[in-house]
Length: 423
Ligand code: AMP
Ligand code: MG
Image 1: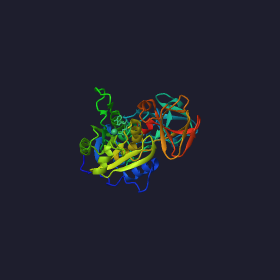
Image 2 (image 1 turned 30 degrees about the vertical axis):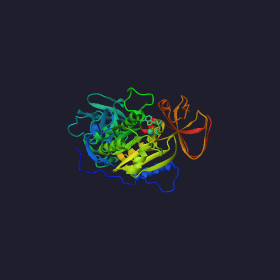
Image 3 (image 1 turned 90 degrees about the vertical axis):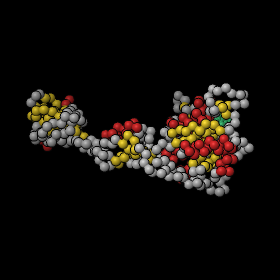
Image 4 (image 1 turned 180 degrees about the vertical axis):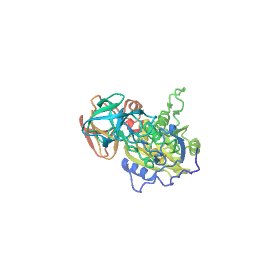
């Protein structure tokens, strides 16, 4: 069910950078995106069972307390605490029992006890339970040592969540355990954000769009598109395959227009610099308000950003390694903002380096890396941004700061596993 809400639109100047900024530090570029992007999708109501991976559009409020009634946490015997003493207690047993789903009919008289099982609601007259293993009993009575704590082995009504309280906030991405909680609290349907539709377009005359298709020697397979489409799916968005455009304004415009019709945001790769064959940036310059962020980042460099007919376009570099890193560093959190889930900052861990590197100051660097068995970060042999094999070899990225750094084995470095980027 889709309601009539119109998704908010981003402002045309949302990618503007202050004048005079030559090289934009990664942090500044991210801060800019975080400030200027917001949710661009509408809401819809979906059944609880279909919400995993979806983003809550409003806080979820408990329709029922959990637990709804005070109940027993163990199998044992229930009674009024006030009737027990220190030392040996001998309480007569009432007939019948209290079990989960089969409440005891009637009240338990003061000074008597009832057989009670885990999950059974406490009958009137019972506020405490002694564990079966701590008792001796026959048909007529139960015997145990006191003192017993008041309320022992019971769960209070609403001790987990109280009806009317909000227990999950808007922007939360639903996971399996949340289904248990929402269901227990009486919900059947919740409002989520509609999935963000993300168009992916590859550009380049040299690209063959179909994996494995016959190719001429001057051609290469479009490696970015399958990667980016699957990343978008992994991030919980709806990928829209816009195929491949040639390095020519007409086919490019045609593809972008398809993207405008079918997607909420478009990610392109290739042609984003300022060279002769950089048709993405040229077209966005001529027909939209291209902002080219020269990001102080390796691998990466220019990130072409524009609002093309109301739809944000992220122009990633063509090199697969740079496209991948820029997608993680910029597209991942930016799409998250647009999808309603807010900014996502991956958690970094500090580990000793297993490599040597002398890094100059002035730009952030990301190295393809993985952890050795003893928890050191090793890096891929080559830093070449055309080396796709390193992306696949790696299990994460080492992040080196904008400042200079001299790294030798054992130097603490920041490592971010791919999983922290939702992959
Ligand atoms: P560009 O950014 O268009 O100058 O491309 C930079 C490099 O990345 C060139 O070597 C391109 O052939 C390569 N490249 C661009 N797009 C892709 C793609 N989709 N898959 C694989 N390589 C690409
Ligand atoms: Mg190109």
